[in-house]
Amino acid sequence: MSSDQKLDLLLHPVRMRLINAMAGALVLTTSDLCARMPDLPKATVYRHVARLVRGGVFEVVGERRVRGAVERQLRLTRERARIDTEASRSMTLEDHRRGFTSATAALLVEFNRYLDQGADPVEDGVSYRQGTIWLRRADVARLHRDVTALLRKLDRAPGKDRTPYLLSTILFPTAPVVGRSAGGSRRGTRATKGK
Image 1: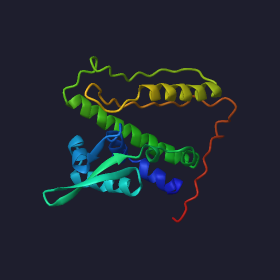
Image 2: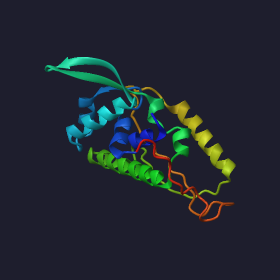
Image 3: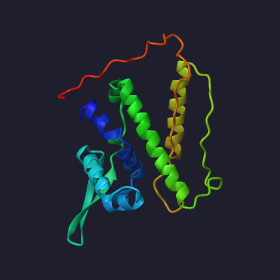
Image 4: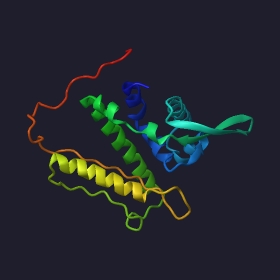
């Protein structure tokens, strides 16, 4: 799959929600996903699941007959659900805008869904703080590395005593980057292969 195809596959709010729902090595069917996302038409869920299966982001790990139809059991292929370094480098500013919009749209839907199911944000440890920190370029790299290491230590398989939490990290400069002119960011368009 080319970088362009991977970006088109992953930078979509519905597919982002489906990927988040499958996290933690869960095995779910499309019917299970429809039940978890009652705000979406079933046809929409089935269509996006099919795209994720074709793209290798979901793998079929089993099938079973349910009322005469074959129902596929799916699992997330984590390495395929990420935008890798190569694809990230090919992203244009418009790709970043589209990706951020999709991510925040998916986040908003999931947060509203959480609130609508009788939430207790204080008890559940909900947080949506914002703050500004002043960093050197090397500090940003260290932040990414240290947070990734911490999350790997904390990440566990699903269990009766565990609740899935959606964690979104957002980090970007709020002023021009030191050493780069205001117009010095990448604004080129990526090559469109086969389009």
